[in-house]
Amino acid sequence: MRAVEFQEYGAPEVLNVVTAATPQPGPGQVSIDAAYVGVNFADLKARAEGYRVESLPYRPGLEVSGRIRAVGDGV
Image (cartoon, rainbow, N blue to C red):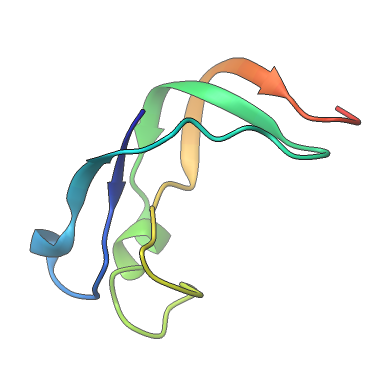
């Protein structure tokens, strides 16, 4: 899959498109084939050090819609 991530805090130039393995859902989770992705204020602020990002690299993306690809146990 393709994803946007950053490995350091900063301006939009720190964003990179990367190829990553498709994640498998864990218990209580679903995996989605994204059709549409939104960028919201929290995604923009995530590039600022000290704002809700626990570790780097980080892949922003809090708003997404699409089709469920896989479900984890208990879903």
